[in-house]
Image 1 (tube, rainbow, N blue to C red):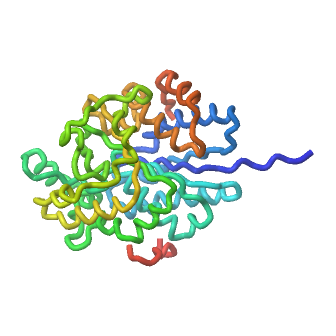
Image 2: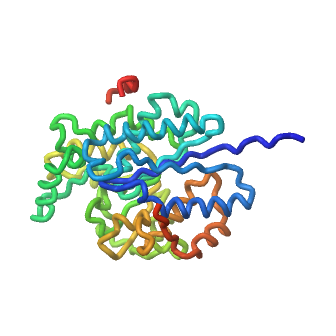
Image 3: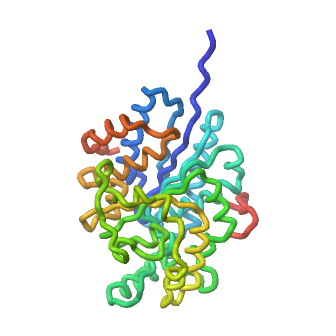
Length: 345
């Protein structure tokens, strides 16, 4: 009797954000595993392995800069990769807020130790991530106060404000070709953004856009029937949003003293194809709801949409319907252009 060959493994890494914990993605993980179970019954042959790194959890764990935080995550990920190496097939990275920036740096670290020459870089996903910094127009007392406070809180917030290095800010360096070329290796890149009520990360920086189209052009924020937390227009126009008019690029951040960095970051990141999806929540907790962090808040349908894309094969309509009709899940407690010198880490 022939022995059954082991299932190929898809490693999915969920990375929390600033002052977050590994438990931030508990609800998303539960939805993912429920959906995978349904697909397995339909003959889906790929096994999922979920990793939620804990290296940066706890007070102060995200304070010492993007690079150091990413290196700690890299060590955890490498341990799991070695454990799964016999059957590992693909790797996907998912980051919330600051976690999306950690994921960008982590991708570079994995590439520099030849991981993506052995395993497929499949999906790269960010949710409410400040790709273009957390800088806001300094035209109101609130924006000015937030910016001044962020500059002195810790090394990480200084980096998020482009205030860490006057000549070569970290976020700017993370858009040079040595980083961008690694992101280009992923099969797909997806960016989720909150249309409103996200006071930590505004829409344009999360969606890598020049403006918020819902406020600038009056596009209606009609909700999707299948994914009520998402805007229907963002689902139907996802492949039509790759080009940005030059006049808007020229206007982008023109009054900011870091405008040359911001424009360069915008242009370089948009050299990649991104699928952009827009979420709409009506509370001040939108930044957490976009990952369904709290089971008693909205956000399940963003997690469902995300998990559908994370699965190696497209989920059938039956699987989507079955999971979306389930009760809200309950949480149980639980660089240079050359390769980085990882031997020095």
